[in-house]
Structures are given as structure tokens and as C-alpha cells.
Image (cartoon, rainbow, N blue to C red; front, side):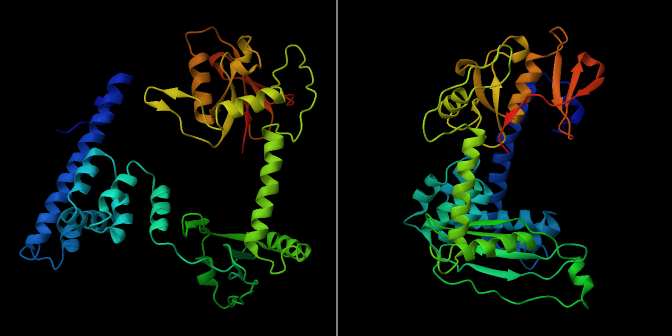
Length: 378
């Protein structure tokens, strides 16, 4: 049955949520049926009579699936033919095609039931960690090597860090200036965080020349404590100090109790003791609870007034909760909705100034930043 996008626009909020949930269930069922049929088609080799040399060719040229979709479904079909329980888990939403692909090389008649249960409703990152515990990889040596220079960009260096006792070995590898085309095609790749075992990770990223020079200087200053200059040791020490700094500035963590200063009447400032208590109580996680459970976000957290400051809400622990930025804005929208009288709301623009917006007109006036509006964590 064809459904136009216009029909969804006519649905109420509750009906739209129900429709999306129903369609997701239908998609899982259809996907499971497709994989089961591909498994049988593969066993009968029916693609040969269709003029295709392989099931992959049949999926891409006859069924018009993308290469990625075809590969994932073929791999899942062969796994489910060997372990039918995977098909049931897939249709139930316990595992995904990505999960099947990651587990496929490690499944055996002895462990498949345990692995499918352990992978139930896990993220890709969690599955990668599970796979690393099954087949741990050796530690990679800490290395620093120079990348080819890129046109109109600063020279950068690639750093691979992992627990190791080997000294740093710079690797020469500069590109010739006679290869501008190749250098123009170089693109920055995202940092790599790859589990090597239950408690070991490979971390790889690219830094600028200035950062590399800081690294060398730190290594020289740490030679007594770390003669090898292992990047993993430097990285751990630097993160430890950064974490302590962030906990002190963002969460008001202190090594010993201090006398709390009195908050000025009418101030929106949240006392340090309140921030510490709220962070511990909410476990460093967004405390918004929706119809299907509590939000799992731990990034972009902000201190949220349950009763807004503009409506007389005070900065006490009972009125302060952690919210991710999205849910903080969501609750602000619900509170200051059109059903309530127009109130002045403050927004921060990219210049760091506060914009006072009153009512629906959208006219703004700027004034210097006096106190933080959103108490967030970068």
C-alpha cells in the first residue's frame, strides 16, 4: 500500500509515533523475509538461470540493491541459514544486519547462542568491543610519522598510540612537490578508536605541527618518568590532567570542602554544591524521562531549571536537573509555548552575546554577557 508523505502530515503526534513504530516493525519483518528467501535462492543457485554469475550480481543488477545493501544481506542470509536463530533475533529487533556482519567470522556451533544473546540490542561500538574480547589483537607500537604536505594547509603528523614499551621511531615519508594532484585529493580522516582486547584500544589521529612540537617538548620533560617517550603514557597523563581541570571548572569538584559563598538574591548562578550534588544524583546523564524511558545522552549536558528562572525557579538541587542540549531546548519550548503569555527569553548568538527576544516578533537587542544562560559541558 503506497503512503504519501502528505498523509503523514495530517496525523496527530500520537498517531504519527504509532505509525513510525509500526512501519519499523514491518521493515524488520520484510527484511527478515528477504534474507530468508535469499538464503534459499542461494542454496538452489537460481541466480545462474537468471543470467547472473553470483548472488551478489543478482542482488545488484536484478534486485537493484546497492553494493553495501547486497553484501550485508547476502552475509546475513548465509549466517541465518547456518544459525536460524539469527533470523528470529533480527525480526524481533534484538540484533541488526551490522551486528550479524561483525559477529559472522567468529560464530561457531558452540558459541553462537551466547554471542547472539550478548549482542542483544547493543550498539556497533559495543559489538566491536565484544568481538575484540573474542579475538584479542596485539598492542600496536606508539609511532609518529609525518604525512605528505597538503596544499594550502599546515603540515600535520599522524600519531598512533597504544600501550607499548617501544621507543618512538619517526618515519620519513614526505611527498614530492611534483605531485600536487595527489595532495589535493588528500582528505582528513576521522580519528580511529579501535578495541584490541577487553581493556586495550588503538587510538589514531592527526595533529598539526604545533601540537607535534608540544608533544616532543612534553616527551623531553618526561624522560625521567618515561624514558621511552611512549605517546600512550603522555596521552594518558594529559587526559588525566584535562579531566581534573574539566571536573573542577564544569562540575565544581574540589579535593577538600570549601566554605560556600552566599548567592545574591535574584541571581541565576547555580552554587557549586548544587552542581556537584546534581551531577552525582543524575549520574552524569540527561535526566529527561520520555514515554519510552530515560534519555541516554551523556554529551552536551546542561543544568536545567525544572521551574525556569524566569518564572521564579530557584537554584536548589530539587529544582536543578541535568539535560542534554536537545531536551533542555525541548522543555523550554514546552514551557514557553504559545499558550502562555509572551516572556523574554535569552539566546546566545555566535558572537557570545545575549539576545533578548520577546514574543513572536523575533526582534532582538544585544547586551553584554553578564551571566551564563546555559550551564553546559563542551
